[in-house]
Amino acid sequence: MRAVQDRLILILCSLAWILSFSLLRAEDLRLTLPPVLYAVSGLPMSIYFDNIVLTEDPEAYQFEAECGLGTSDVRRWTLTAMDQDVGDHPLAIRVKDAQGQVVAHGSVTVRVTRHDAGDSRAFNILMVGDSLTNASYYPNELAGLCAAPGNPALTFLGTHKPAGAAPSVAHEGYGGWKWAAFLTKFDAKTQGVTAGPLAPKTSSPFIFPGAQGKPAFNLDRYFQESCGGKRPEVVTFLLGINDCFGASPDYAEAQLTQIDTVLDSADQLLAKFHQAVPGAALAVGLTTPPNSRESGFEANYHGKYHRWGWKRIQHRLVERMIERLSGREAEQIYIVPTELNLDPAGGYPENNGVHPNPEGYAQIGASFYAWLKAWAATQP
Image (spheres, rainbow, N blue to C red):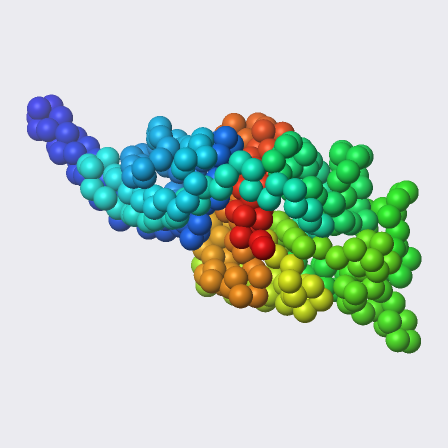
């Protein structure tokens, strides 16, 4: 009797094992890559595989990257290009399950720019964002990279200069802000306040009292009064976390409805900038991925929000951003793949779910820098 029971247990375990691999192969990884990954000779640039697939268990898969440049390990494809690598290079990524079957594949163009692209040029830049911008680490990184020989000289525009910002750095980045906040947020008591206890604004820097005291969005006035009459050649945006963080991760249709509403606000803000400064490049960073550790979310949210929940929302947000913003260079809109080069483990502290550590912020800055160099190389 015992032998029959043991055999039955063995059969059931085998069936469970087979079923688990069947489900693994059936998992929709939704491999997502933007059209272009930007790189600069001499500067490391990576694609972290966890950031491009929708799964709780990326370690269960094998990632294969095929490109004439770079190398791969189990967590990433990485490249430190040289000047002789300048140009476009196709990169294909295949994902295999435990049985060696290809379950997802995608491709991206790796665009390598010379280390001295944009040398002797000068650009005004305005950086718009949420708490990741407010922290000022990645704007500081961009400023530091461009301060080296062979780079364009940047003048940072903006009214916000937090304590962490480098002396030359200003921006419009505020903790908790959404795309729509820059279009609608207004409080007459704090409008125009740039220092002191009211400096964490409750008013968009782009909104002013209008006729009969009614608030009005006015970029021309912002540039004239807040930027000394200077206008940007480059405007960067890094938003989306606050817009979607509270969405339900379990209802895909509701997620997409909320994401589309968010991107409608993004389109409105981008259109207003395109109208006010039609020649300016509008560089939109793709919303960054979460810390790979659940401990970061537990430390911040104590069980209310979880890593896998935000990962599902963030991944679908990035998918939709790529769909909505790709191919719009005629409107001076560019996608910056800030979600690819951010290490979801080493780029985060153990106790924060969505805010990187200095290393992670530097990786975001490197992504904006690589895009800026590629753009500068095309300017007459």
